[in-house]
Length: 69
Image 1 (tube, rainbow, N blue to C red):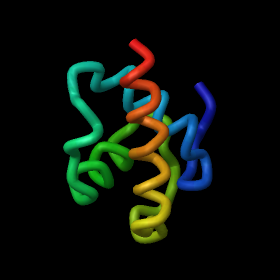
Image 2: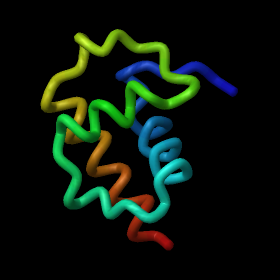
Image 3: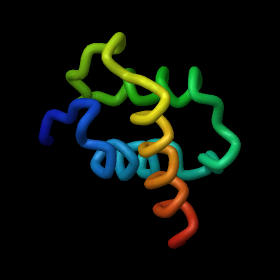
């Protein structure tokens, strides 16, 4: 299992999709998204290093993963 950090937005979105397949990411709040990212088993990023731009990128990629199913 590869370690992931905030810059790994695509990997994070895939991990979130696999861990939470029933959540529609279009409706997730940024605080909830932040919590879910930080709780991923292989996430090593500093929780204080995220920002709205990063969370938005993760959310957009997660939406793409969700819609492909």
